[in-house]
Image (cartoon, rainbow, N blue to C red):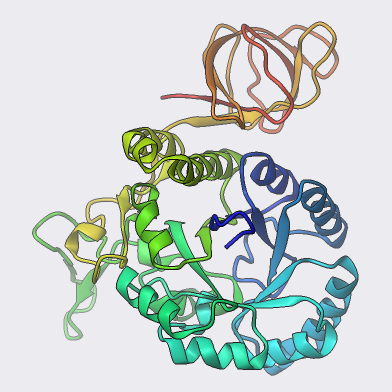
Length: 410
């Protein structure tokens, strides 16, 4: 828990820009990865300079930064990990997130002053495991996604208050136990436990009888489709009191490969839900529908409560497709504002003069407005911005401030 008695809100970031968004939109802490040794090798991740800048930005705003180093390490990884931790020792993140005992040992040797948190990849499902890691020197243990609210309560009852429990409360679910999956490595040679997962759980599968090669039989469940491994996304905005009463110290959002819009929307919504509950449980109850509406404005795969209320059943899967539901389109982040009111932006998706857009503010306010004018990076007036990453200046019908998110709805 934080000093104010609230649970920590821990938000992902895959780049320096997104880290800043996470901090501004309500995160208490942000978790990031370096170029290696984290389980999101395909994320943008952080160069040393950006990591240092991100930590400085977060600390300036009174927030923390945790760095993931949660691969299952092989012999060939160990020397590099030691060198990497020597660099992190100088940058001073607030914690390292680790799953491998060997990597844990190196962290203790190289940077003993940095907290170590035990990743969900370590399969933390009972209180004796928590006590074991505390005896080794861990400050926090991340609960396996397969735990129920009642099981987490039992863990909290059997461990010291000083040992923190972190749990995922939102984001993609993995079909494999605590994310320890071999499918990607088997099919493609890209190891999920080394950060290179190709997400084969989202693929469509068929059966083939060994004496009839080339004859594919569809795998169906109640004739609804063949995406038998494709889980819905976890969402617990409507269950904040249960999470708090279970003794969870840190509410973790999944998604280091997600956009700034996703991070802003999830961080802001969970921030509002937590703060509303502590202000008044009645206020929180009255706004549950609003939280769900806001969280659905980003990209998601329908929602489930995962394992928190028992084993996941057939309603936790999506059988008929492997696509996202897209609640809005991310247009960009407001940058500098010129004297004549134009907002500097880097285009994330095409939009045009005359379009209706929404300005999403960190405070929780959403402003529907129009695009009145647009200029390119040479100051020439243009009707639209069709090129990805295009630098533009936009005049909106309402005021946008730096770090506002600009989005539009389908």
